[in-house]
Length: 326
Image 1 (tube, rainbow, N blue to C red):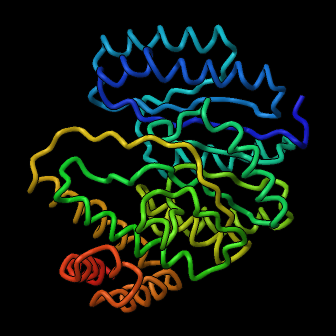
Image 2 (tube, rainbow, N blue to C red):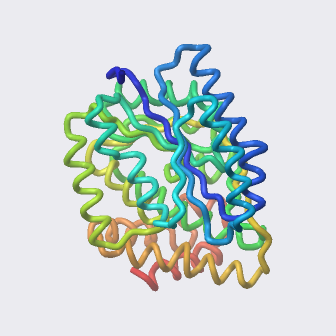
């Protein structure tokens, strides 16, 4: 029976290839089993589950191999849900974090972890601590910031594109209400300065009295804007900072893995899929569009926070891409 002190934790992962199935069976399932054991040994008020999405490139052999990992999860009584039809990150995360059934069941909080970056078994104590911070401060949302240098591309030469873009987004979010900001454990200098608030590790305060209005507003506006990719997280955290406030804590993370890709192909993909596309969607939310424009104006020319970490030409280049889509 669910107690009002319980936290529902969903580890989320995308299995896009047969190789990722092998890693899932050999490594990630073990992380979940270790987490389940720690929850039991330490009597932690956490209910653990997994939400995985299978990509179109997984073969029939890969799907058969996946049964091994599923059987292990069942053996250790770890609830799991595997989606074989890709509905997009927005539906996956929103559906896990803001599930009406979880809220109605009386859970104190709902938490999601990006399995690729945040090993479940190494973050249980962090989840408990963030939960306390969120409820103490009356925040509607908590964020687990990353503890390693942030790598956002396969080719290092392209790294600045998404890093500067995320810097603009974080600076935009930081203009709102940050109830608690603990950046001391962020080793990446740029992210320590502008914050690391769009990460894949989130904790939703299910017991917040005004939670319904926040969720209704978030989902309705996200649906109307056609959110499908990272723009969902950007708006989710932005809206929390403009309504009930945010709290953050540094979580234990690992470097995000990237598949090999040719330099120019990766750059073009980043510009279109990680900058132009989300900004076009976000620009439908008038308040966020204005706030991003203001952050871009502050940073253009290297006169703001980003100027301490990147060359002016790189900052202006990324700001130019953003302005093209606003």
